[in-house]
Image 1 (tube, rainbow, N blue to C red):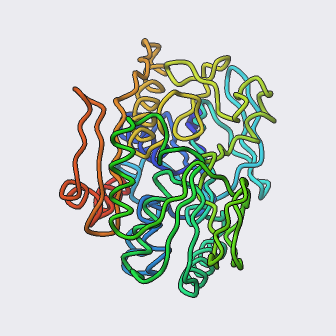
Image 2: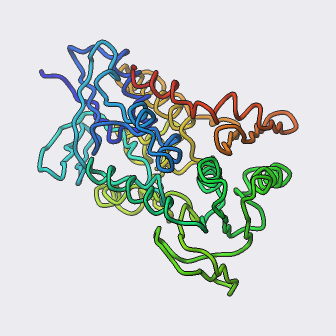
Length: 372
């Protein structure tokens, strides 16, 4: 009997965490861990806003790392490719790539993440990634009056990065709520986050919408209610509705009932799919009531890996219990604000954000997870 494949679709935070834990725990004579990802490297999305604005080559080299050191003791295999479809049964199934290559699996982990708007919306080819970064940098360099549509974490952090490099440029965030971020965080923190931006000269237009899906040059722009931003010469749509889960191939394989109306994968507390014991899901694509963040995706991946080992050993699986909400927002390299939903709710200012994230963008954490 040959080795049984444990296949992981997606090499982001969840996929890498699962691959590391599985490659360490499983007997390589019985099991092979396979990670499938469209790009040959994992992009550290947390640092990509600064990269898009600065085109810092050293930063790029640090946040585009391959998968060659992810597997513990070399117990694993990386396959570059984009998944087209998969079949399923109680014993396993077959994953088919767009290239036509077929990979059988005994257990499958869906951790393919989600698609963003704006600078983090990376294409799935190496040339596409290069062009994407160059195009955005060219446009933002040329512009003098930039409108960012979406006042979530990405829009707020991008505004700070632009102000770091070009303090003279006008930057405006248009957000479809009366406060920045979303109601997962208390109003007091949301107001404090807004104050940290306006203190740097970043303009806020709240409770307004702009229905424009592209990053493009403009000659003024008008909100849905008719408010005119006459001087605007560049608009960037960030994430007014959040990232879109990459789950089309999941519904095609398992039926629409496997997904919510938002396209998120329905999972049990063990992060197994509702009707499939040998298919798990983790990361931004799952339906779980929490904010989508890299740290949480890593927790998902590690738990799934341990549950896969338990399943193979016919032992009880453990439920995912979630974690408290927290967020650390950068505002350029030297400022920012953080919130932890513990005790009475703790807000920490620029000194904390600078120490934890704003200067480093957690690059060392990412490099360690990649084995570098």
